[in-house]
Amino acid sequence: MRVSFGPLDGQNLRNTGGDAAAPTAPALADKRRHALLCAMVELAGQRGYASVTVARVLARANVSRSAFYKHFAGRDDCFLAALTALQQTLLAQLEQAVASQAPEHAARAAVGALLAFADSRPAAARFLMSEALAGGRAALDARDQGVDEIGRLVADRYQRIPTTTIVPDLPPAIVIGAVQRLLGARLRRGVREHGALLDDLVGWIDSYGMPLQELRWSTRALGPKPARSPLQPRVPLAAPARTRVQLSATRRAEDQRQRIVLATAEVVRREGYRAATVARIVELAGLHRRAFYELFADKEQALMAVQELSFRRAMAATAGAFFSAGSWPERVWRAGRTFTRFLEQNPTLARASLIESHAAGHAAVKGLEDRNLAFTIFLQEGYQHEPRLNEPPELALVAIAATNLETVYRQTRSCGNAAITRLLPHLTYICLGPFLGSAKANSLIDSQLEGEDEFAQRIKA
Image 1 (cartoon, rainbow, N blue to C red):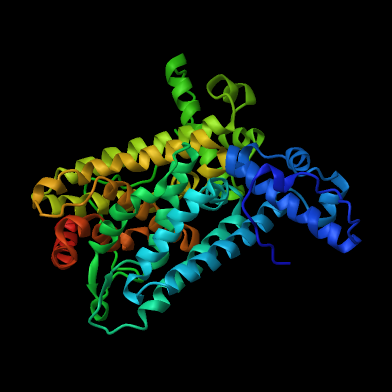
Image 2: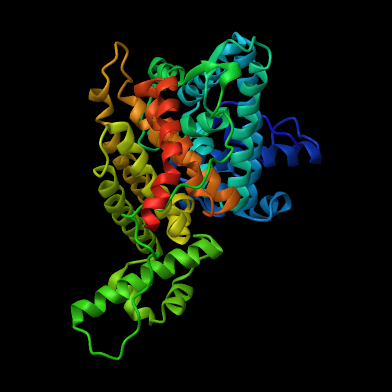
């Protein structure tokens, strides 16, 4: 059944058990179902999905437990139904917004509609743009499908314009997903009035402009596999080897910590964060529960340690590669090559950090976002490299970080980490486009791709 959500407020969710007109049984069932969906959206959109329980949904909707289970198999089923229905509502609004603008402005119209939605319905927007990433694998599928549908609205509008028209050379769905991530982070922090971002976001999107007939990066077709960076370790991170040698207390704790962290990442990769248990983690680590709780309060803290380990190792390798090249654009390429190689080489860490963090709650999500933004330090030099009259706004760095995260997230979900390094040209373009312009960014990428074979030969030698 298609559900159309009206504005969420407390009055809409009260007195749903019946009314003076004595509705029929089917009408009452529909009313209760709608109340449950609205309660799920409001609670998850205000406090985060990790804090939502069936009991809280029942209390908020004023519906009995038996009525809940007539409609839904459980909390996740209710969440998924609410997500699907709310996506339909948002899609209808974006269809109108995109259709009302000139086809070449479809992307900016879609972004403007997302900002307006976040301003007018913050709880619903947080639900869609942030908490959808916390609802498990079925919810992630639904979230990605909804983003893709909006992306298709934009792409379809581009089919109506002359091929010489300038449009952003970015995959529309990736742009939509990135803007939703950006807004989701603001909504979780309680930020209001997002409409003021429109000019900066439109300026950032337009900085990737190219004639429609020359678009190169508007699909996620993979590039060639780059050569291995000499600064990248040859083997992935692994648990310390077992030894019969008596270790000091400090060394033993360090070994146990790394075993637990890597075991947490593996269990989370296999089963998802919410299904992961401390029992499974210590079993895989070959340790006792006591060792786990001496180091971590719970599995959320262990997952955040996964984030920290992945970030420290990736940042160290990436920084070393960045400073090994000459010009700033070349440094960005080399940093990206090492970064993507690290993700490809350590798929368990990458998946646990990039995909499962949202299911662990606000602290883990904030950790992911903060660490993702930390990599924008490699872009700061872009403002001095080639000063332009209309330099990218500060928000461009946040948007670039969100776009790269969305690109890697999509690749990891669809194909695992086996081809992450083949995204290097795409990620480099996302980073360089706003600073160099599309033409110069493409020229730099082409020169780097041409040099990859020569670089590979030097590495072998």
